[in-house]
Length: 325
Image 1: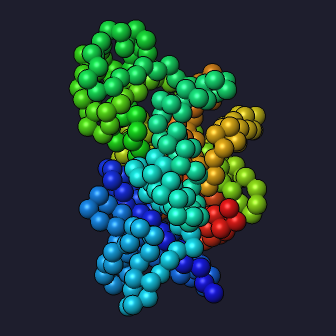
Image 2: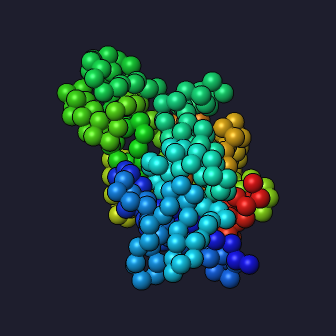
């Protein structure tokens, strides 16, 4: 009998539109001979199943089920493609865990930790993982631009602490521009992380469970036409993403080992993608994504293809691993 798989997409943040694209890619490419697939769109206003005719059916949140043509459908597993809240910050994971429904992402605590850039980097620094120098601000704190400049230098990056897809991020070259950048970040989150500029080669590497083991994917080098790897660079084609990265075999091994170590330290599950900048032959961690993009423009599916993993096998394996758990 086919397993019922809910593909969760949408969400509560600015990343919802990207998540819908990721969910559609999963929906189109998973094995329909093995699974019955259901698109579940989640927003602050409603949770609904959307069929192929774009007709909507409400989700019963008490047991995460739907009713269609008199049939009550429960799900054997969930494929989480929600970027941002509530899919990347642990809320959906905790909800599904309480209901005993396996899912493709990491556990709720790990999701919450990795979604909070400040907390995650603080944990990993204690394990000797190199990171940028950082300065923290909460909404309502006094903004001391001179102190910020002295701590992190110029240029620097001002980031919303809990956001992705480069929403709420600015590169600041002058102290007098800090307040505007901070206000922009506060539009996305009430916590901010301000980091020193790392002048080097930016790379991204995916780590996935595949056929019973943890596999580090080929590394991607990111070369952007813009001042940094912003939304337009990521999704509007204003960058080159070169896989495999044009780095030495020694550096490839160093970054791959570091990505695998981070995955193990944090006790992650499911897909993860880590971002690094190489400065003076030292990879510095920027952040970790535990629900990475799966759109046609996204990095992780391209890395899987470079590793000779077809996209259908990538997604099917994720569900197989979830069902084993």
